[in-house]
Length: 194
Image 1: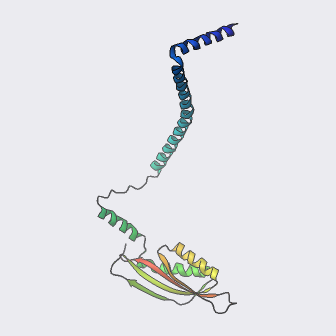
Image 2: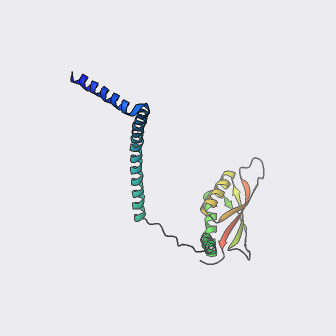
Image 3: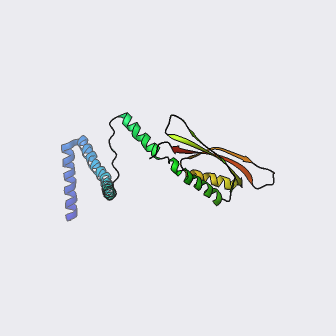
């Protein structure tokens, strides 16, 4: 009996609100209640996402405190920025002193692939303008095509200042497994000593 009295009281309260607000007011109240529900439904997941992003940010800040990044010095003019970038670019090239070591790497890689290196031609050229020299090495090698291909890829990987300028193949007879290959490699070397 108490439940029916409460239900009747609820009906009476709803009719009274409806009478006071009218249909437009009731629609507005329903829209307001729906908006509150939608905000609550959207806001809870957003709060969890914000908390997760804050944790990630704190972890990144902690990592930066442990391993700080070198600070770049501000550059005041475009000329200074260009000079700084050119200096960084020049620093990537090795000097003439490292050339024998780089040639040694080339010959060790060829030997590691089972290729026979025949006597080659070498020349150093320099233009007046620019900050690098060109050391050209014409290196004939004898071996299988797969070995030569692997050698070229290894050279370009191991020596970033080397470019493959020319690659020529010559096969004697059709049944031969070995090819005579002519590699023309260009070693770019810094003019100035570091």
